Image 1 (cartoon, rainbow, N blue to C red):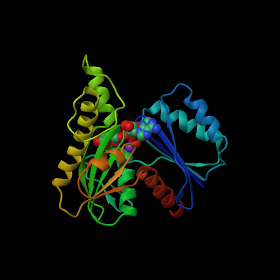
Image 2: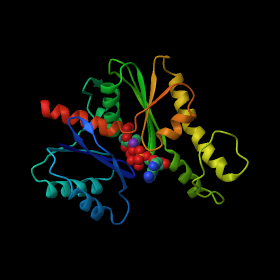
Image 3: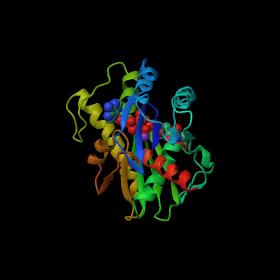
Image 4: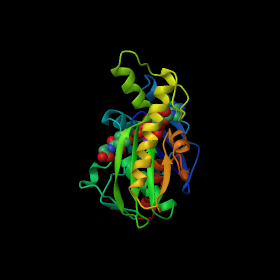
Length: 246
Ligand SMILES: Nc1ncnc2c1ncn2[C@@H]1O[C@H](COP(=O)(O)OP(=O)(O)OP(=O)(O)O)[C@@H](O)[C@H]1O
Ligand SMILES: CC(C)(CO)[C@@H](O)C(=O)NCCC(=O)O
Ligand SMILES: [K+]
């Protein structure tokens, strides 16, 4: 049994994996004041895993706090902290400095390569939206980074006098009031990014969406799309299997 932890820019997602099968995913906002207390209570109920695998793009403090907690709860567990490298599990990193590529992007690409055949374009719609193109061979062509839907709305709210953050449903029509104008505007910014990126690639590239806003963005993008909510956790699972057979 392994514990998979995806520490994103705003949320923590974790799941138990048994024989490469990932169980239900728990999501938590790690910036809440009682977060460490809460996660401690939850994890006390988890039997000792063989491996704790952590992907973190968060600040070092949150990451090391969690690492310390894991080590005190399950001292026998092996800790696995994958890093972006030039090549792993058949994926070849396009970055000039391989280690600079966000490990969440790296893991999502590895999971996509392992689980889906053909040329693909991985779109992670989280705090940030990232796009990475990957040939069937595993060759990464490069990617893009842009603010996620929430972040775009926050940027407007914090830098204008008259706009406030809202939870208006996302639609694609031209709006006749401020709230939907913002919601629909940021959604179309995201879909426009994805559609402009995929236009640069051959028709063979399949869009695969992951992350908290995957469904929202995928629904509004034209053309065929695949949805796989937990590609980062699946990438961690690939690393766990690799470490067990290595
Ligand atoms: N229960 C929820 N709580 C918070 N955000 C949610 C929830 N469900 C969906 N979302 C959406 O998910 C997005 C965040 O996605 P995700 O959890 O993949 O990102 P993250 O872990 O914060 O950061 P990242 O994965 O980019 O490092 C938010 O923009 C929000 O709109
Ligand atoms: C782009 C984010 C913030 C997306 O979570 C993360 O992957 C990250 O911090 N990346 C490092 C920079 C890069 O990937 O080029
Ligand atoms: K993400």
